[in-house]
Length: 315
Image (cartoon, rainbow, N blue to C red):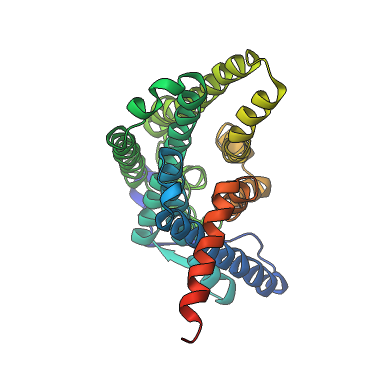
């Protein structure tokens, strides 16, 4: 009872970032500034290429353009605050700003997870049921998948933020991370986290595992279908359409599983590095992963750059 009377809710948190050493701040600023610029330019370039090329107006590229848009929003939720913290002595973030940041990065992360499922479904229908592809993956169905992805992700994020807001933080306001994430905040709380733990270990686990299992099942059925193709060229063509997506899925879910499927007490600097991988590095690499192995995408980018050069040339 005495502890309850002494507790008080904090008005701000201190983000320790990736390193507390002063000599590391400027090199980290330079590194993440370059990564952020590459992410913005790469993703926006691919989005413009897809939107401007009529040959790329298919369900797969529709989902890709949304994925790249999410990546831009995703990194913008996190990186600008990191850059400011690298160059400032006071690495604080207000309570309201912390909750807002957590809501949006969770919403964008979950939306990306469901978009990866939608893209896996698109590949599954394209390879396993090509004759009904146009009907199943119609524009209306694609929009419905997108609406579900965004709506469910927003509700999930809102639930988690509301659970965090009911906690009391009194012993410390120092977050050993570069953003407001669930695990570090739960570790800081001095009030009971039983309800939060139960919800995260049930609803949160289902929300994370279900899309991952959908992707695994889709690719398992794709593998069975591809192995039945008699020609080696046919098999190679089928696998080549899935390679980029599988790379992104592995990078995204692999780092998430490493961060969130471990005991809260074992949270260390390695978790911060893993968070960088799935929150920032994957967003930067996605345009390269999808464009380098995709002839249509490369042609779309060349057409876009050609139009820009012709417009810029003096008449």
